[in-house]
Amino acid sequence: MNHWFSRRHPRYVRSLVYMLQASEYNIADFFKWHERTRDFRTVEKRKRLVFTPKAIALFMAGWAALGLSLILAVLIFSNASSFWGYLLAFAILFETPLIILLTLIAAVFILGLLQRPVEWFMVARARKRLAAHHGVKIAIAGSFGKTSTREILKTVLSEGKKVAAPADSHNTPLGIARFVQGLKGDENILIFELGEYYPGDVRKLARTVGPDWGIVTGVNEAHLEKFRTLERTADTIFELAENVDATRLYVNGESPLALARAKEGNIIYTREGAGAWNVVEARTSLSGTTFTISDGKRTIEGTSGLLGLHMLLPLALAADIASRLGLSGDEIRRGLEKTRPFAHRLQPMHWADGVTFLDDSYNGNPDGVRAVIAFLASLPGRKFYVTPGLVEAGPRLREVHEQIGAQIAEAGIEKVALIRNSVTPHVENGLKKAGFKGDILWYEDMPACLSALRALALPGDVILVQNDWPDQYA
Image 1 (cartoon, one colour):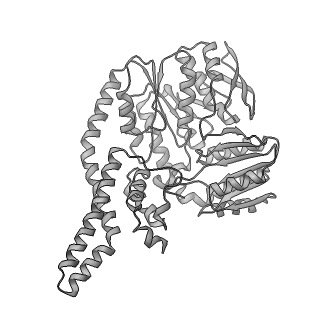
Image 2 (tube, rainbow, N blue to C red):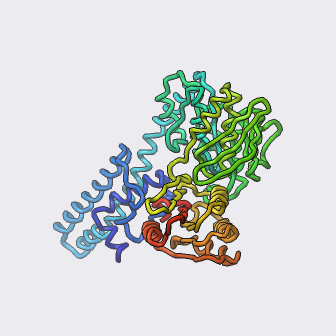
Image 3 (spheres, one colour):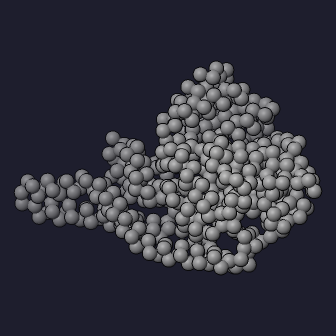
């Protein structure tokens, strides 16, 4: 009944527009979400509708469809002279939600047609402007770690250069084009993320950017729902290699699928070093990470606020690129010292009651999960691991989540809190198969879980939240 009534609730139009916006106007993804939704009054949980010009146009179209449907139903009813007239009026009234839905889908299609030439012009202008820009352009592609790598690079390189990079995860043609509009032209270095959703995406973005240097952060199952196979995922990510000289392409040596695609001349980077730089004596804790990094001529006692030994990969990478682009040893050291945890990416918070809360809710890929479980296991005190599981794992969904369960069990984490949904039973299966000795706690949603854990946790405990599903998956 909630489903029926919520489709006739005044919030229905707003909810549909929000769902379209959150799905990035991908109609297939929108319909999957629409079919799963039982109550349209509560779809805005983690985020809210942003009234962009496009959203406003859709909002108005939805309300216009509602108003015209009601007016038409009343007119037909008031002028009806037969049973069929009354039936038609009631049919229009009854199916008004469907009319609104179809109107919005048609509006998205029409707006897309109108936007296409505008977007093409913006991207073409951005490509031309970037071709004339004298700054060094660095492009980053991969299934995971793009934003963290970008921010670390920006922090380190900014010690000796003027650096610009798009904010947030603006990694689409239009997002990059808008960023380019705001450039002053005197930047020394430009850093870009290249988003991959479908085959050809990275190639298109790389041709727009024209990178001097490229970085492949790794390949895994993060977007397998769209790509269907890891081979197609790797093919798409390595489209970057077509647009960068082999000797200027960095490849993550700890990602087997990426390393398998590396070519002669590529620069392999790991937590043990990158290029000429070698990392030794690395330690990590809740206070950050310390290490020694040397290129044979210069030795830097590195410190970073970033947590986990896995963060040595982008730190070593940043040191090597900075050295190649002319930064001094002191500038590199200062840049490394300024790196800090990013919002929702293994971000520590220390509660007044002595509990440490680690917010890793933006980390939703298998490699990131594995690394963070290892970090959590290295910490003293009782540990809580909280997760709703991962999204977009596609045909390997069961396997990926059972592996997560096994990794948690092997790490000896005491408490595992799972959010009820379609994937966390696979995590539970993995825990049990691996002989997990701790407690498994179940909660209906993340707010209820965190509220309960606040009461359960004691001073010295560590609570890690791994991933948080967007509204379209909740």
